[in-house]
Length: 244
Image (cartoon, rainbow, N blue to C red; front, side):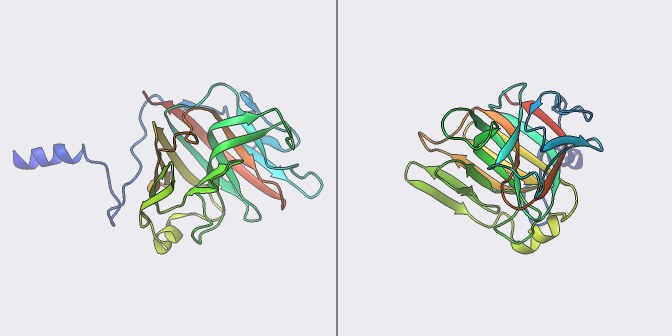
């Protein structure tokens, strides 16, 4: 009887990596696919830079066709509030990319192109040396820069950032976790002020935004092509679930 009780309790406790780090929750029913695998229906970006190739969304800049400033392909069929987002990505190591969420499409004022987005960004990179790696939160177009780094549990208060702990993952563990030149799986869970980023099922960042003016609660989802060196980035299995 006791063993059965312990087994039942174990199913209610979030799984953990061998070193005690929390792993991503199991995917639940009700996830909605945002990409049909065939074309860019429901998305809006520069057609010279974004396409569907071999069943994935591909963004690519070249020396002949560069990005005029950071540019994005924007999901047009809704906005994100509280959500669970899952996707897979890979990108070249000549530049970096990102995924915007709870962000704003900027259409007025001085902008470099028609697809400028500002707000929370989940950084994407093909690198394995902390801190310049996939997973940190960047304030695209904002004042706060790298809001929360991989490995950190942190808050942002009215007087700035507070790091509670910085050892959610270390260099050795991250080097084993990330898959260079290959597909990596991302989970982003945002509920209220609390945001968590997972890479390949491992919690890499835990952030709470308590800033009274700068915290974001709603906005668009978008995928980034960064200005600068020619690069490519690819996305697949993009799916979302609204959290109530």
